[in-house]
Amino acid sequence: MKLKLLVAIVSAVIGEREKDADMYLPLWLLVFGVILIALCPVLVVLYFVKKLIIFLPLAVAALLLGSLAVACWRNQSIKILSDTEFCYTTFLGNKRVYKFADITALRRNNDSCTLFVAGDKVHIENCAVMSDRLLDMLDASLNEQ
Image 1: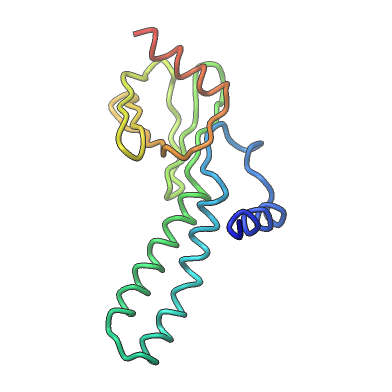
Image 2 (image 1 turned 180 degrees about the vertical axis):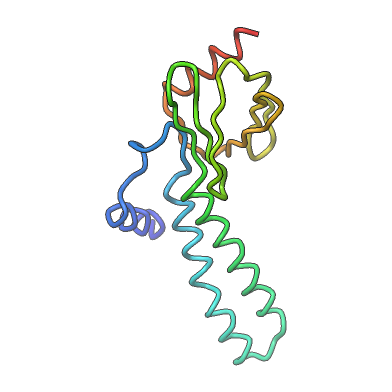
């Protein structure tokens, strides 16, 4: 319940991403990343108070995982450019344009899907929000094979 309230507050402050992309990561991933980053100084203080070395690697891990979650939320997306092309942005912000006709396969993993396009891989998390338009175009491209 508290996490839903935090998501609602963050959503009100920064807005939604539905208008920007046809595939994007949900807002709770940003909230999760911010919580992990905020946990880092707490763990450092606990290290000095409790004198347990385990708190330092936990602080580093929380900072790294939180930063990765925020970067993924901020950058990873797919935007349809036309009926034949889409732009995939990686979690590092690198943009690549692909043609729907170049899609060769889709492999479902435990935590994500991998779309094989023109000898390259497009990573789609299971938690990603996808538009109906993108789902229809991917389905049509995979059924043409």
